[in-house]
Length: 341
Image (cartoon, rainbow, N blue to C red; front, side, top):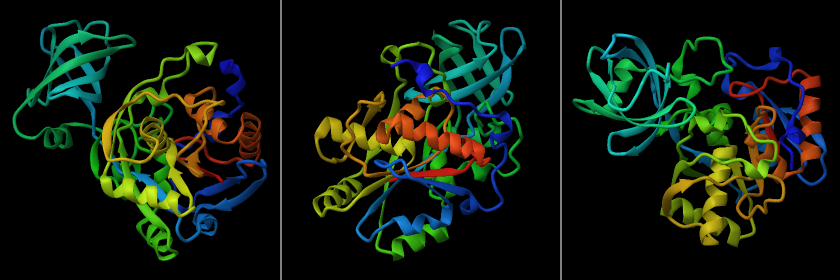
């Protein structure tokens, strides 16, 4: 398939720059997975589409304040570092600006030496592997020195960094938020539980590969980025029971979806496991794990548009996006939501 088949027209004015005052007051476009039928609701109406015995799967990753501003020790030049993924111990894959001036052996200083980053490997597209040196606990150093890494299409500064975290965020490690979960409040989750719906948690640490455009014409040639995931025995048991009892698994976001489908693909059932996934889901993919998907509206020609198209159909998805543009829905991370079911 050609990447152009997943393009759509999006006026820049519809890209949400700030979150709504109340998380759960966003709009909700409900798309019939098999019919293409569309309904326009508000996010709190999502309750009406759940049934007792269903299981809602949430990604509990927490975004790190992983954007650091410092100096190149050799020259004193200013540099920006965005931490993406822990490779092992204190070795991290990062993005640097300006990257071309940072070579193997160069060191960067952040917070007057509170964090020293040594370049040990050069990667493509501004990427580097950096070895971090610091005293104490890294998360505490990042809380002290770092900023929240908002996506490149958000130009506004975020007054409250917690608005780029889900209310259930727990496991530190993401470079970006699992944004479909930003709509949930503690109160709404409690109402969902009270209806008899199970709440399950998985972890997938989101990398910035999520935002990288597909740079090949034929999507079969696209090389997917890898992200770290884990599932507990408690969650695996709950999900297997849900399937055995004939109920539905509803995934919150593409990150939860990639984790669930990876585990079902590799193990044929849900198991306690962890690892790295580079699963690439696009039309033709056979879903084995999920029965419903809550998601935001994604960038044109992105792997995420391909993923949701595979769950419904490319025609239904692009028609829904066209309708959302027409009705001036808010798009991307701080935007409105879609339920495909």
